[in-house]
Image 1 (cartoon, helix red, strand yellow):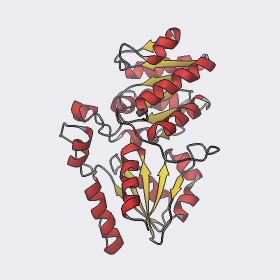
Image 2 (cartoon, rainbow, N blue to C red):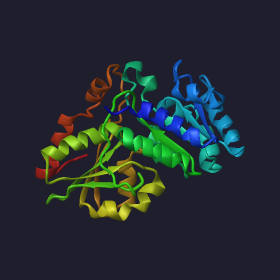
Image 3 (cartoon, rainbow, N blue to C red):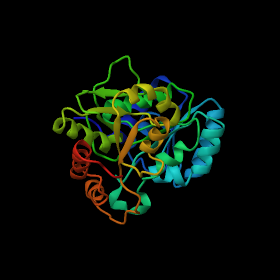
Image 4 (spheres, rainbow, N blue to C red):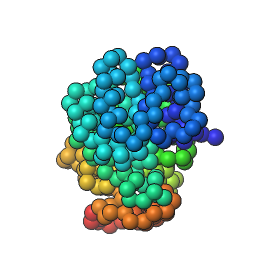
Length: 308
């Protein structure tokens, strides 16, 4: 049984901290009373409370002192409440800070609109020099956490909530920046999956449409996409990005700019404000980010003109 993204992060970071004393764990009061990192490394665990912006500023100072601070809070609060500090400390000054943001997309559906994060990737992407990772499953999450710990670059790692997934197979010598290519059939259409729910949908579509290719992307910041844009563009003439995010500032919009010669489409959560509170899946259905809607879109693209 795989661990969820949040559990994988805590477990991997606790192990890494055993061999690297520079690693610190900062939590915004989300870790609970039995945090694994705190139990193993109590002198390097800090509950920052509800103070997202100050937490990034403090992390910047800790980074300046040679530490590697990992700070975790809700994706919506990390990207919005601490946006200015992320821009200055992580983007402008490139401090070695790792922000781990669970509850990405609408995985915090029960908490309502205030806790939904459908704009976070767009906001963080606008701050240059920050690596943005959207891992899928336990192995991808563990690998991204190790890559972040071993890198001097600032990171934003977007996770979901408590659901667990099996990561896609990845070559041992490939880091998570390498796109994963799955089956290239005769169709000129290729799906591009981002994050956990987007990848779940694309894996389902792979079995329904064996002639349609699928690329899974873990890193979606500007520099990471640019590094592999030729490989991505060679996959097909038409690319359909599946991402639990808004169209505005989403990965489809960036890929369309990086590949003006290609036709890039998007299956996303729309532009309306979600007012529905429910489970993750119920909220996604409400927003039209569902298997049925994606199938209708693919059918339309394979047989008719699609207007997006």
